[in-house]
Length: 317
Image (cartoon, rainbow, N blue to C red; front, top):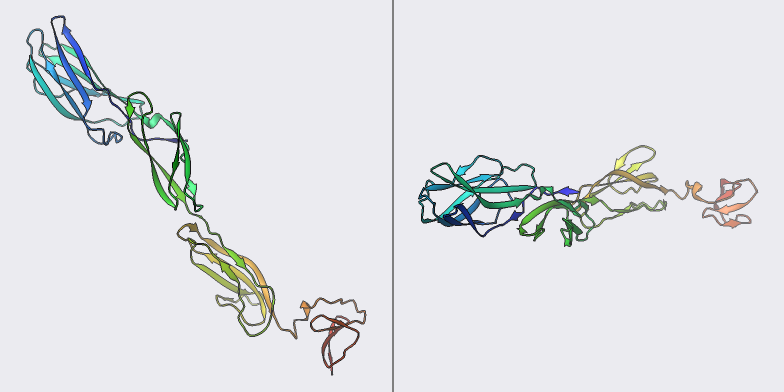
């Protein structure tokens, strides 16, 4: 579950009649002058207030405002009884963790009397629960989310490639509450996906024989190392000499995938036909049977050459 760290704006703008006494009244209007940026508690928020002021005893006065529980601040130098007024000022929030922020207003006269006015209230959505926005791992497909904010659910299709993205929520979530809030999520790189095909044991022919590595777009550079099992000698060149070779593959970090440390994917042997008799599948129990060098059973040698007799090499002239 993620918490939102921004602000939605509740605009309460209108005309209200507030009486100083039964003989006179005054009219005022108040509004948030520009809602752009209201979701940032650390910048100035312009407010506009205008109307008509008349004091029952002709006293001049002035307007004051208060943000949450801060000190009262005078908006103007003086209001003349019987005059219209029109003021704009910048208000600043203290971005504490509270569910609402309130702009309070009041008129104060020269006699020290004051009258409270209806102000504005903003809902701080840091207290809202938002579910459905989760960090993901790259899989090549656009990331689709089912997002729930204050019980309202919507579907969002986000980024595809690894990176940090911002999901912007706009709309009305409670009566007279409008605004914009942003939620960040990340798509991490996936694990490198490679296919290593190690050759079957091959008969010596003087040619190089090596593994085949298949990669997908977004993988990093691939390094194949051949380790001679007998000597431990390493080489990045495919071997051609007789011997047993361990295939080790490493993948660097790529655009969409994390790399893989050097990992053994198997081994193969390059063998000499004359000396590699262990590759011939013969019965070595000493039953007086004859086999050709390529593993075919014969009753007896029919021509000069190398044979297997009772599991041992035998040269027939």
